[in-house]
Image (tube, rainbow, N blue to C red; front, side, top):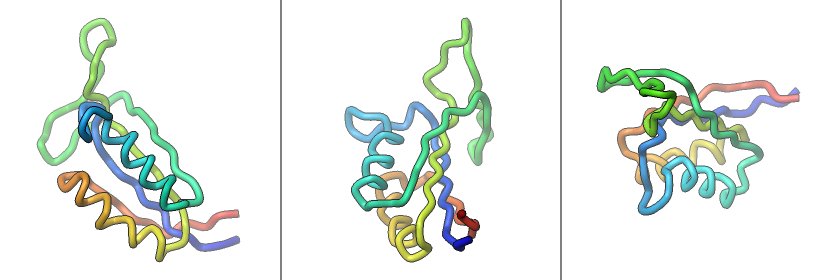
Length: 102
């Protein structure tokens, strides 16, 4: 078992970076930083500090679902990426937790 750091990034599907979804750009940055692993997940519902419930719209269509990115690697590498992500997405919530990997 090894102790590593898990970074969870909370966004929504409508967040953009230029012409691309923000989650794609963030995943690209994590990949180029050689993070051990990262996953983008689309959630059905959620809310944040703006107290707006993001949910599936009429006929199941919505472009504003919550998105969560989870990345795991050594603590030094993950902590160095936090300022990079905050520059790209200053209002994004980021949490860090120690995890054991096998």
